[in-house]
Each structure stands twice: as structure tokens, then as C-alpha cells.
Length: 124
Image (cartoon, rainbow, N blue to C red; front, side, top):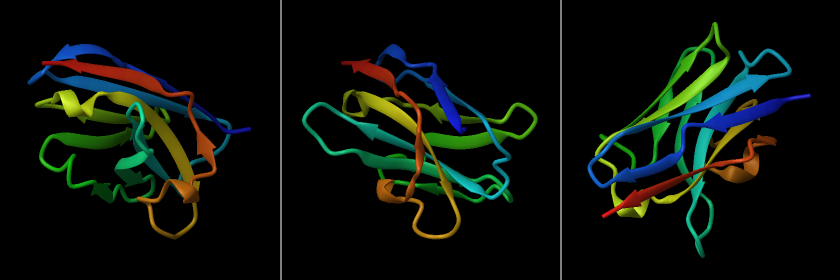
């Protein structure tokens, strides 16, 4: 059974940085894409970033480009989201997700496995 456990959320001031972690277990993820999504209160879940586990290709939402970096540690089976220059509009619950096979990595509908989420609050 696939398990994804996020950590690292919290309260940070605007302009600050934070790193989220997603520990994956349950199977070999070499054929998976790993994504970060977020959902702010009253808004739909939106794509933030994704990484192809094998090869390391990365994808970002426009809102994340230049500020966020997604990476993975194969030895630890962990995916990270480094977030810099945080803005109040980044406030949301951030979810890690795993997707097998091809298809768009920026659509939440294609992801079969989800973590429980970690909350980020950016104060102004």
C-alpha cells in the first residue's frame, strides 16, 4: 500500500522560506511522477510542481516558477518542495501526490495516491 506523509508546514512571514517534505513508502516509485498540489480556503485544489521520479524532469505552475524548487532523494524515497520568497497568497494546505504512468502531471485527477496534507500560512 502506498503511503505519502507530508511534513514541514507552518507559519512563516512573507518573503521567508520553507521546505516541505513528502516521505513515500509502499512500493518502488521509479515509474511514478510525484506532485505537489495546494488548496486554499474556498478555492479548488491547484497544481504547484511535479517531478518525474526516474530522470528528474520537473514541472511548475506559473505561480511557482522562480520561487519553488521540487526535488527528490532516491535513497530516502522523499520528495521536497523548497519554497522561497513566500507570499500571503501561498497560504494553503499542501498535498503530496503520486501518479503512475504517462499523462498530464499538472492535473490532480491523474494522481492515485495522496498524503494527508500539511498547512502553510504566510503572514503579511
